[in-house]
Image (cartoon, rainbow, N blue to C red; front, side, top):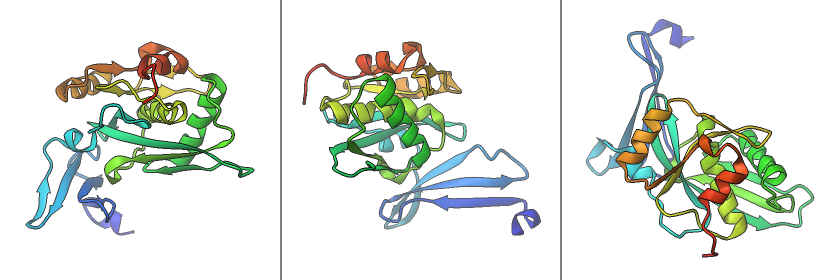
Length: 216
């Protein structure tokens, strides 16, 4: 009810166990609600983070189960590290557990990987985490999530310096993500040597291009 009485409603989000916080505009009568601010909790108070991608998009080369996704937070492109663990299970219904990702979308990505990429995930628990306590709400991060899961399942790392974006369809095809130019610019800005996107056409081709050939 109070939202209708004020001109601006802001939300301050973040995991209490992490130092970073995100400020979102839920309602803004005088401007866009597609902008956000990223801050760091320090001993001297809140400090603005000028380049969030440098903080959230760090990935150690050669690490199995880690991939960098270029996603959008409002209109702001961000590089985020996606981490995954795939472990055998004896449970009748394997678990798909996501921290920072939509659980329904995670279940869909796992199903597409099983059906169209030939990954044996039916007897495995799949865990996915977005580093830094950030939450992903847009489908353009699908390919980055899929790469992290495939890396964990195969035991091979993602190619060093690679960032990925693209929406995954139920048929296994990749669809273009919104604001492609801004995403590419962000990837170039932070030195991504390889950018994997919807031009791969299918998920199977994207995985072949994004994963190394040898186990870590």
